[in-house]
Amino acid sequence: NVQRGGPSTGLPTKTEQSDLLQVMYGRNGESPIPVIAPQSPADCFHAAIEACRMAVRAMTPVILLSDGFLANSSEPWQIPDADEIAPIPITHPAGHSNGNGSEEPFLPYKRDPQTGARPWAIPGTPGLEHRIGGLSKAPLTGNVSYRPEHHEQMCHDRAEKVARLADTIGDQEVYGPKSGKLLLVTWGGTYGAARSAAKRMLGKGYSVAHAHIRYLNPMPHNLGDVFNQYEHILVAELNGGQLSFILQGKYVRKVISYSKLHGQPFKINEIVQKMEEVLNQ
Image 1: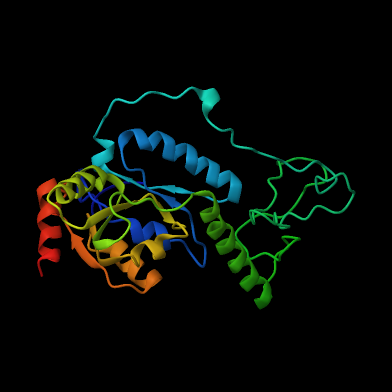
Image 2 (image 1 turned 90 degrees about the vertical axis):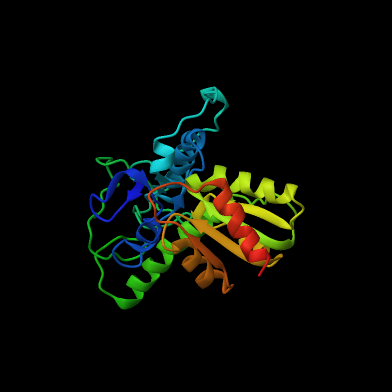
């Protein structure tokens, strides 16, 4: 998803960050999805690889959520040696068994105890035939089921395998002091302007820091603890306050929303002025 000003055709050549709630909660039913937001043109390369890694690990679609500013930007970067990129392990169960050498019936919804993902059976493999389709399934067998407890368990299982991806992404990093008066929070293509604004504020002697969230779902385990170290949380984004809405609900913490809906990226001075305004209240 390369976000532009909307809705509909909207501003087809202008940037925006207005699809966040749609990608987070727009799927039918209780079906969460991982979301990664690259922060620079070069990071789009690495984020795409990471999205593939997450998709295979959890057996789920993953949204790579960029924006028009990144799509129309460029920067020099070194293409990494493919041999230096960690491989994405892919396994398939063997035919006529569960892949462990036994002759047990194949259980297409028997989930991996570590990742919560179900096995990736290659279509046409003898012994691995099973039902697919949109109807609600029973755990383990994957048979069509309308039993209430089966539906509830499958909803929880889908959410759990996405939540477990947080174990693989590491802690949220913070630029600047680990505690202080104000934490500037951003995501996506706002990274450059926000980081430069934070540097200017620190140069002026203000007690500020910057946290740029790359993983929007699931979020890093330590994000709530990071927020607790600052008096004010200022969220700058190119929408009507969508990440602010999510963070307030998830962490029950008051945040100050700084929204811009001009179809243009933030300017460094705009963010600096807003940070000074909050600190001087």
